[in-house]
Image (spheres, rainbow, N blue to C red):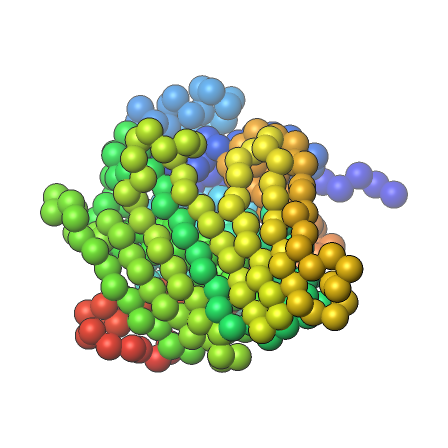
Length: 356
């Protein structure tokens, strides 16, 4: 059988925290090669191209004119992603658009429609689905380990706004370009993950955004209650207000509670042993109602470690026709519909139904 041809990847946009972090995954994955980058900032462009041996272009126009690509990895300001993705799709280029994929629902829908029309594969970076603890939680819920799910809780606090300024991505602090603050950039991970774990959709949202730093027009802290079609309620606490001294700069927590038990998890960090706590009154767990389930995970260089690696590998499989995209464009639209409802609830000071 002939060897699969190498898939050529173009990086679109460098004013983001993640392009450099994705490169170890691309470099380690057989059958793919990052060949070129497009970025208007000359200093960022030249440094990145020199570090990774790439051809560099000042615009997407020039990249598309001179390069033949199979995949575009798009890391632009969220408000610019839809136009860039549509142009790449029209050239038959598969799309890996960094989450949350656009600055609003309209932009995300445009990307989905462009990919569908062109017949190209599309995904976005909700890589927490690939964490083995998350996958075990999903399977335990399906097995009835905690009975009918009643509620869930998610906390995600990561860094301060200064990291975006230092990382050449201060557009993240402008709502018109980013779409919003921490609920838009961080909370979307937990929203997608709980939707996936429960195999259910959010129907109503109540949101409260707290604006502390008046130099920026995004919120610093977001709180939300989301009601799922099946009746479960998810409480979210999402922020950019972690102290600089906080270990690893992230404060993360997830719990799922049901009629027969609870699952709780404080995600660790690459190379650490993870622990999932299960407490269950379900008949099948009578012999071990309380369990500390450990996961010894090897450190993996690159964005989100082994989760980022597996996310990209699955997308490459989809491009080669041997699987489905790890996260669909429709998933991205669903998450942004929920975020839109959270913002509307905060503005209107009332519960809001999620529009599809």
